[in-house]
Length: 224
Image (tube, rainbow, N blue to C red):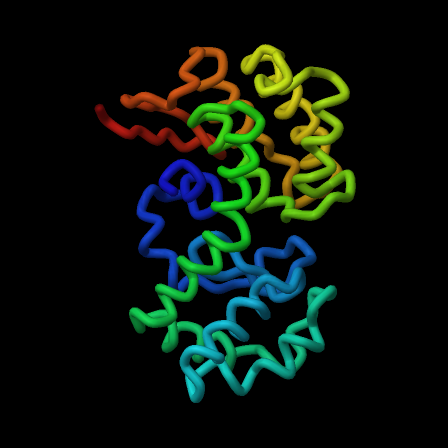
């Protein structure tokens, strides 16, 4: 979580991101919460729907119709400042924080780590998959996690298929870097170049601390 947060939020304090919400200009509407749920991609809608089923009457419930309308766009229609205030209010509650944790695990962390383990990847590979799924989504088109993984497998075999773990992760990061550079908002690929690739060059496949890396020019460190 700290490694992903360094790139998503420029801090290791990922637990401080529950209240985060803004439009970062990437064409995905509002980005918010611990992994950057987006109003334009549908995962923010899923989060609020699941939270509302468990906790009806919450501050975000009245924005569900607007969230459904803006899915697939970068529009703020029906959201705006009232939605931002409601998000901040909801995110101060332990219930909405748990909902974010659960949606992160259900939609991103568990599928990424499970797929990595089936591919024979150790902790670094599990982090690489998770970070890619957070940014690109769990879909199967060429710019989503599934498409990136499929393209990487055309260049190198997974360890589960008898291939080299280093060679496969190198191929995966090559494909992902190209995918990132197709979007202006993701032209900075330092989360690959000076974070994930650094650990790979060090052959730290188990992500054993201490860990030192750079994202967007900022230095981060996790001690032993």
